[in-house]
Image (cartoon, rainbow, N blue to C red; front, side, top):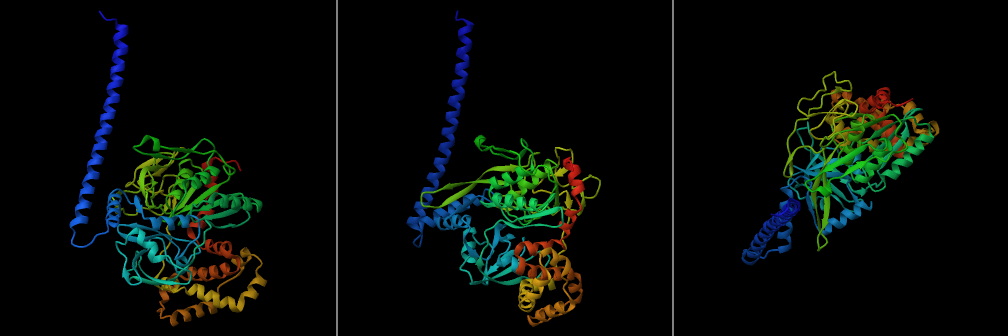
Length: 531
């Protein structure tokens, strides 16, 4: 009789061997499935190339097949041609000329995710969410992603006309945009709002964003900053490592900032804060529908750890992780390999089917939900608890702690912006008044608090608008009067003090920012900071 001491190890060995063989068979079957589909495509390509009525470009057929394959997966898996990849790499180096927008193809429509701060599109009033339906009079619906840069980018000084559909406006808007060199900085502005509150505006997460951010914060601390508002509105995202490092400056060491889930175990990652210089500073973060990807990673981590308060509107909901794979001919493709989750396990990505986002009613209800006692409760979204026990919402994007919706502009103001009349007016005004303003106001803060837009200036602006055949509407004009005054003042401040001066003026009439200013006592209590 064979000893049990011998039988048991043999059985274990056989089980292990069986598992190993099974895995190899499964892999072989999987490989066979892929191989058979490759043969199928090869046969179709060969027959088409041989028998189609006209001469065919086999390279184009192959590229179209790859595009179709990726478009069936999700909104962000894409093919990048060799020419496009070259342009993408140039963009990362920060040197390109065009109209200055971050875009996405959403439901077959070219959609502005965010106008780039300081670029020509922002100057004309093109907004996040605008849909470009024509370019130079040619239909742009269903335009291929790689065709967009060819149409919109170009040498400085050249012009392009775009037709835009904007939510809430029935008639399309026509813009003629003069291309320009697009600014490459990512920290657009940083200044002291008052003696204690600093403000930092981050427009995207580029390769130098963390260094720019740390310099801005250091400068503000030198000016007496004790609290900070981090403005991520309109920030479409960018490099994950930059978001991770900036979030880590606020999130204590050892706390999770973001993690990814994938069916490939090696692609599952966790990003843990290494701690930073600003873990004890009171923090409020501003976000809106143009805040995406890396912006959502930062704001989601801040919210989950009760490290600060989030104010504004629900973010875009871009939480898919892509990896780029290069192809032999210099092209590449990016395929989604994982999903981003906030520290408490909220999926950042909003719902989609294939390349199309699912229609989802904006369920933001204006109000305050920090105490869970009011009407911001959103029964349409799954509830999560922060690590401090507060209720926050999943279902895609980051829902702010305080939802503050900005008023929509009337058609009269839209036309003033579309025709760039605020800029043109300021340019004419400064030609005659620059010296006086510079002598009277030595700092942008003095200008913000001391300079007023008078009736004479407003009358001149209305006359300019009438010359451009903008029909005056008194009700619309009165409704947007604060916006109109602020826009003129913004342009004058930018002319003298650049972005810091113009943003200092702008936020003084910004409801979301002004709400943030009032919340620091709550933020301190929430984060259990010692003051």
